[in-house]
Amino acid sequence: MTPPPAATHTASPPLAVHPGAGVARGLSRRAVDPRSWARLRLGLDLAVLYAAACAALFAQTSSGGGWSDEVVAFAFPLAVVGLLRARRMPDERLRETLLDTTGAVVGAVSIATMVAIVFQAVVGAPEELEMPIRLWLFGGVYLGVQRATLHSLRTQALRAHLASVPTLIVGAGVVGNHLVKRLLGDVRYGLRPVGFLDSDPLPGIESDAGLPVLGGPDDLPRAIALTGASHVILAFSTESDQVLVKRVRECEALRVGVSLVPRLYESINERTTLDHVGGLPLLTLHNVDPRGWQFAIKHALDRSVALIALLVSSPLMLLVAAAVKLSSPGPILFRQRRVGRDGHEFDVLKFRTMKVGAARPSFEPGDGLAPGGVEGDDRRTAIGRLLRELSLDELPQLLNVLRGDMSLVGPRPERPEYVRRFARDVAGYEDRHRVKSGITGWAQVHGLRGQTSIADRVEWDNWYIQNWSLRLDLRIILMTIAEVLRFRESA
Image: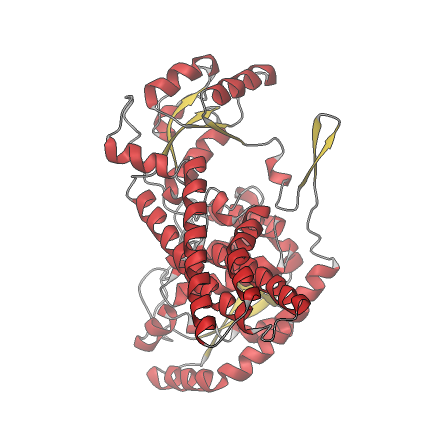
């Protein structure tokens, strides 16, 4: 499950405890019910794919075509839908992204097109490539637009709280409270907590999470009827597994969805595989090795891409350097000591954005916050504000990447004095030093820039390390570009 973007948690008022929530909310809730949503999506997929096939067939017929084109046009939509259903789609997760959905659509349409080309070649069609290529173009555009539209409508409905699913949390402890904070912090997950169930709740949990404790797990049917909840999440509680299994059976009988937070969740990543020994499920952990061959490839690609990026952006960097020099007296580059992999210290490079010689006031970040951004009085130059707004001040860090001090993607490096403090005060902080620091990272593309929660940064950065892949790096780079272009929500 992709972690939600970090956001300042503002406790929205919990759902009023009553059976009904209005006709509009009820209809919207049914629309995003997993079963209803899957049927709607399947019907729309087939409709737009057959529309695309008809358009491709019409264009082909106008220039001449054979019986094989009609067969391919009829089978193509079924093949695409079958490929989409053959594996778990991103929109079957709690929170989908347009980037993931687009990739899945392009992949399914492309594979179906290759199958169509093979068929045309086997039957000896005179124009064996023309019809499949038309289907690829029409199908990709039609299905892509339809999926993007559905994604946008669903996201807007969730943000307006029209489609959120009332959710009960079984387990009113630290994990349950953290789960509520994350779900309320990002409504795009579509799960809106309405209450806890725990026979031994954590003291003060109601005021911390802003949700009531509606009883113990034995009160599950009553709580579902009272709140209209259609989803239940099993977090950690003091109840025995036998009791919780009974609660799961009750949810199945009531047609209520169930999710659970697994034990040892800190060690579970997206590489974890599920096997069965007889009737016993067995999770096998596959951890990332920051010193393995995959990271060696990552670092080689980092340096190659950094070199190309430096060559391509050199005219822009020369213009920026000239603007910095002319804007105010002082050096062009700003150097600051940072801590990277294995505690190695290096000088991070940026274009200077501050005035030189101005008195620098003492600064201490707020409790639980990381430093960064404008610290104390605003000493930025006019050009410095623009450079920071467009993130152009970060371009010289490509030299850090080329020298091997940094990576393109990874946890942001911190100053030595803050590293020592956070290592002492924040659990898991030093785990970030298993990998090279990055120009951008998973925490940054989810809003954790400047003076934001250091605990949240640690959580997201450690999640990135646990789930690292080249595909995830590419996703973060694309999200960074979208952030700079102010199109972050579409990514």
